[in-house]
Image (cartoon, rainbow over all chains, first blue to last red; front, top):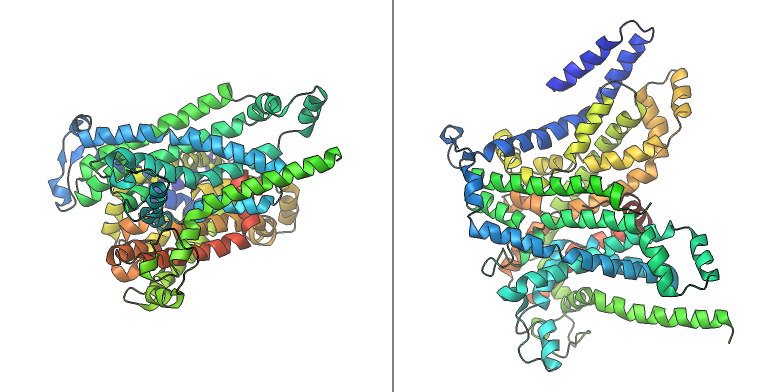
Amino acid sequence: MQTTKTAAHASAVVKPKRTGSRLKRKETIAGFLFIGPMLIGVTVLTLIPIVATFLLSLADWNFIAGIKDIKWVGFDNFERLFQDDAFLKSLRNNAVFLLAVPIYLAISMFLAIVIDKHIYMKSYFKVAYFMPYISSIVAVAIVWQVLFNPSAGPVNQTLMALGIENPPKWIADPKYALPSLMMISIWISIGFNMIVYIAGLQSIPRDLYEAAEIDGAGTWTKFKSITFPQLSSTTFFLLVTGIISTFKVFELIAVLTKGGPLNSTTMIVWQLYDTAFVNLKIGYASSMAVVLFFCVLAITLLQWIGQKKWVNY
Amino acid sequence: MTATTIARVRKGVLTAVMFALSILFLMPFLWMLSASVKIEAEVFAYPIKWLPTQWHAIENYKEVWVGKFPFYKYYWNTIKVTVATTVISSIVSALAAYGFSKIQFAASKYLFLIVLATYMIPQQAILVPQFILYRQIGFFDSHLGLILLCSFSVLGTFMLRQFFMGIHNEFIESAKIDGAGHWKIFWRIAFPLVRPAIATYAILRFIWTWNDYQNPLIFLRTDKLYTIQLAMQKFTTINGEFYSLMMAAAVSAIVPLLIIFVIGQKSVIEGIALGGVKG
């Protein structure tokens, strides 16, 4: 609120001599009235909290103690963080989870190309592949939990019927738990990415293909030299949003595994949640939040730089 | 056979193959639906019986909706929170978007940059301070707090700003000459012109809020305030042994969204494709 007032004041003072200055002031007031609610909301619910996160990351504090008991410990939390096995494990899991992104991008691109040009009933397919995306993750996760049930679940029943004697225990097995979550995540993400790819495909000029056909180019050549490069900006965009979203994975873990078994599916946000709201260590959790913030920031900055260099037109 | 017939046959065959693939893709939903109408003993029967030998749909859904852990209450909570969030968020976003695109004033550019910058802050990085703040001001464990939490969407502001920028300034200038203020111009001219965009945003916001699990989990504590997502998880903890009931609950949580999606399909898909937005 403070900034709002001074800024309004400043803009009124800057150009006092112009004839329209009263009109200008009116515009400024109107401007602030229109963006005011948004500005207040963002300030109270985002800007102040992010500053608080940074401050709290330097403190040793828990919910139960009052503000008086706050202990400033400098960068101790961060030092501890990088010796904390569970947290390091969560970072590693986040890195592994990144692999899901190129996989679902490839599947989505393939589906988008096939659905856009080569088949009938386009809108059915769009809706079908989009269903996991609009369904709630909780509901979807519960369904998968049952499907993945090690002994009675339909997935393993089918595998056993196919002659596989010891099918994996999926989310109950430390080795398979993370890949299982990744599979579910791929299944959920395909629809969204496919829709964006279809939009990208529709903006490719048709004459490119016509020219290529005259030159006798086959399907693969057309894909390699027209479709794929023309989609590069879409791919880049989806890659970045995909990577950022892997840093925010929470609901799947919260419903399906709670980070287990043996920390095999813990990821940075889960670790943060667990530290803050289960163990009530506010300062320590805030230092994780700072790490999360910088991870996302780094990728966003890479996006700005990359957009200019990497994208093909 | 002519070339076009061959092409058509090829397209037909490919459609059939893709259709089979899509059924495989939708298998979890089909299984869910089928399990929700079965008696418990038949849920895990193998080979999978897609149609139950003994229908138990009414009993299952009745237990979910008006049983010990009645879903109608949580539905009502969810509808309240979702509708309020959608309406407030749409209006706040539209107002801000208009302010940033159609009112020229000195601070506008800088303020927009600040708002833009907040977009990249992941919500999980500010959960703890938000939680502390809510405890302090008494918004914790209330629907009002939950509603306000998601009502100031930077994303909505960006999306709608693009559309407001597409409105010719002459419209606004001539309205001004006629003596209309911005408030009047906004409601009479600008808002109706971007109504389709606002509808798109509103549907997306509705879906995201309906499906939100993280915020209710952290900001609600009392059972009777639970939204459907929280209730579902609680329900599965209580009824862990009754898979048919769990599936009936899952179907109940998904169906309203499916209906909304089918109605607003075009604008949802367009909105997603246009902004490449993500919840």
